[in-house]
Length: 103
Image 1: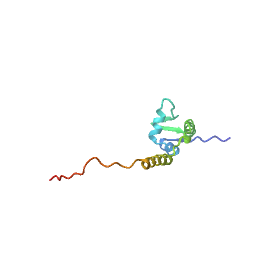
Image 2: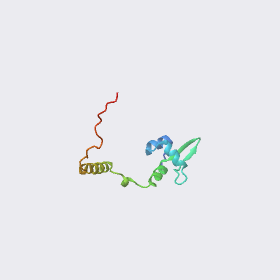
Image 3: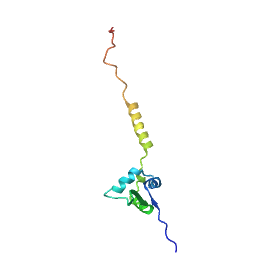
Image 4: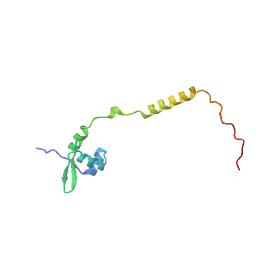
């Protein structure tokens, strides 16, 4: 009978695997609301791959919340251009031209 292989990551390997920084993983381990399951063995944090996957899967999928920045810029620039085209012609300046020269 074969035994299942359990993969353990130190923080650096967990960082490379997940794409999160080591600092973020340390904060996640200490998070009181949703802690990342980890074991402290001889001053080294070890994280089981399955626990890391489950912890990541427990976070909401926010990919639908992505913002189309290009569309926002186009909308703002378009509105700005339309407003500038609709402006009345500039009035003549109230300030007379300066005729006095200062030495």
